[in-house]
Length: 526
Image (cartoon, rainbow, N blue to C red; front, side, top):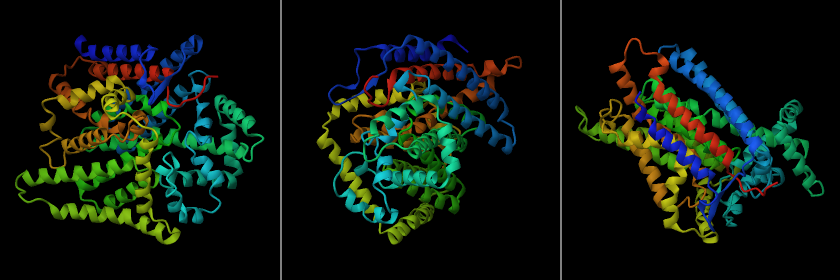
C-alpha cells in the first residue's frame, strides 16, 4: 500500500480533531441551533482513551478474524459471525458511551427518556394512556391540537412502545428486578437525581419507571447494534461476502450512532434497512412473500415516525430504475409494467392489512394522522424560524461529521470513480447496485434541498446514514478486484487488508473524539 493512500485519512483525522477542539467555531448556526461541546477533562479523557484503545483492538481483531473466514464458510458459520459483529457493535457502543465525563455518559439516558422536553414518549405512556383503545380512538383529535414538537409530529407508535414496556415490567417482577440490578452506576446515579427532583410531584420516579427507562435504553442500543446484519445482507445483494463484511464493520464506528443514544432515532436504522433489504430481495427474486413483508415493515416504520417516507420513496425509485434498465437491456424491449404492478400489489397487501385493522378495531385513521403530523411539522419552523440558505450550506458538513470524515472521503471517492456506472454489479444488471445508489442519492438530495431538517440534521438523518455506507461499496469492490489481479503469493492477509484497517482506525479515532467532545443533548453543566 502506498503512503499516499493514507494521506486522506490523516487529513480527515486532523480536520475533525481541530474542529472539535476549537472553541470559536460553532457546531451549528448561533441563534438557531448549535450542538454543544463537552468540556475537556484531563484524567477522564486519558482513562477514556485507554478504554477506547482496548475496545478497538478487540473489535479490530474480531472483524479481521471474521473477514478471513466468511469468504468460503457455511451459512451457519456466517450467521455466527454476523451475530458476533452485532455483539461487538453493542459492546463498543455501550462501553464507549459510558466513559465520557459525568452527565455525558450513560447517565444521560434517564434524563433524555424521562423528561418531556427531550422526547416525552415515556411521560405520555405513563400518564396519558389509561386505555389503549381509547387513546388510539382519540389520537386524531389529539393531533389536531397542532403541537409542533415531539407529540404532534409523530404517529402513536412510540407512546405505545413505552406503554408495552410499562406493562411488561408490571407483569414480570423477575424482569423488573433484572433490569434494576443490571443498570450501570452512571445510570443509577442519574435516576437518583430524578427521583429526588420528582419526589414531591404527582408522578415521582418509581423503581418500575427506572426499569422501563433502562429497558428502553437497552432495546435502543441493541437495535442500533443489530443494524450491521441487514446492512451486510443488503450489501451482499450486490457484492461478495468479503466486501459486504468490510462495509458493515464501519457501522459501529459512525459517531452519530453513539452520541444520539438512546433517542428513538437510533431505533430506526435497523428497521429501515430491513425493509430496504426485503424490498430489494423481493424485486431481484420475484418474491411475493418478501414484498408482503416489506409492506408490513414500512407500515411498522410509519407507525413510529414519518422519517420512513423517504425510505419508501427510495424503494419505489429503485424498482423504477431497475425496470427502466430492464427495458433497455436486451432481449427485453418493453417496460415491465406487470412486474411493477405485482410489486405494488403485494407490498400494499402487507401495508394495507394492519392499516385497515387499526381503523376497524381502534377507529384510528392513520392516513389522517400522518397528514396532521406533516402539517404540525411544517408549523415548527413558523415558531422556530431558520435561515434556509445557511442550513443548505451547513447540512452537508454536519452530515459528514455525523458519518465521520474518513467514511465521507470513501463515499465521495466511490461515487466519483469512473467505473461506478459500469461496475459488474451496477448498470449492466437490471437489478444492479447503481439503481439503489442512484435512488439513495436522489432521495437524500431532495431532503437536503427541501429544508425539512434545518437544525439537528445529524440526528434526524441517522436513519439514512447506512445508505452512505452502501455508497462506499464501489470503492471496496474495486479494491477487491485489484487484489485478485495483483495478489502476490508471499503477501500476508494483514497486508492485503491494510487500506481497510487504516480506514477503520481513522474512523475509530474520529468516532471516539466526537463521542468525547460533542453531546447530542442540551444539558446544563454539573
